[in-house]
Amino acid sequence: MMWLSSSSRALLITQLLFQLCRQSSQFSTTVEQKTLPPLSPAPQTIDNPNIQLDGSWSTAKQALRNPNCSVVSISGLDHHLSTLQSYFCGEDAPSDVDLRMRVRCCGNGNSTNSSTEISYVDCASVYQTIMSPPSTTGWRNKNNNNKITTSDINTEQLNNNPINPCIQALQELALGVHSLTDGPLQRTVTDIHMRVVCASTYSANDPPFHTDKCPLRGYVTLVGPGTEYMDSTCRPWEYVALRSLGVDGLGLVNGEGRLKMASELEFIVMKGDYYDASVPEDDISMMKKNKKKLWSRAEACVHRSPPGNNAKRVILSLDLADGGDDQEWEERGRKRNWRVGMTQRKSHLVS
Image (cartoon, rainbow, N blue to C red; front, top):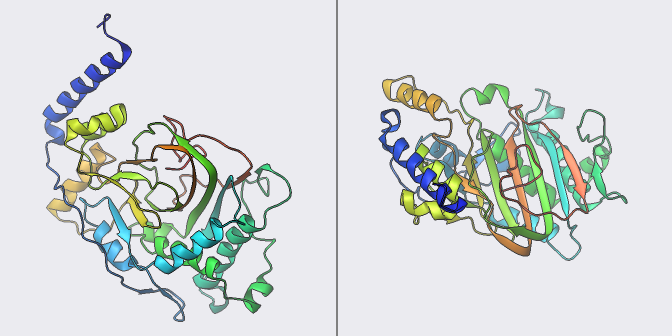
């Protein structure tokens, strides 16, 4: 192999790994490659009877329980997403901002502190931080615990002026994504992490395919190219090919028709490595659990940031706060590229 170029050696090694994985008996289970039909709206009531969610969250929750389903598109959110676009992408919108904050989605049992009211206050904090920025630029954490607080939010003013369409849109997405908690996560996950990235110039050259180290991620591109994702689960040798060769690996996995790009203003929910649904304890479910122990990405959505060349891009992502990554931050005025080999979980990039 000494006379081969580095790219040729990488291709040969990947092909060998691909063949070895295919011959492995422990991963011989076939996975049905099936694109789920569009989800129809199914309003869901939360703990406050005066509010209903508009998106098809209940239908999505049922669809995600299918081990062969790795990603769903939420319908019924057109008005909310258009509102967010008008606020965060207009002429007066901020640029080169990266904000990640916690939004509490569960109340404490008191009528005065329902999940609706608490989440509205936290979403208002996200809104005010984005739209009413401090005079300084750079990196900013509000306290020594790396947490951004909501102490600067005037709750009395919010109560007197409760109707803000942008805050309501953020709240719909926060409560909707949280409503997708299932199985053991229902008892442990009370919050979500909301991230808003407004990039004036988005540049990316062949970003890597990856899966998210979280249970679920909700994602929408308000302006710019949407994320690219495989519309069905990937087996280990397929992930090796995509991770190593990028789009060149699609030919090895018959994946040309499976790679999709999310549309602008399309809200998708992608399974991560830590998704765990409530399923009956039968032989089939036990087999699936054992398979996931061997292959942690068995149900996760394989995706990547889209290639880009200095175009504006604004995205919003929401992760279930499972305790794996509780970082919160606010960054302003820094232009950067989405680079090969870096993903969001432990770096300040987003796919």
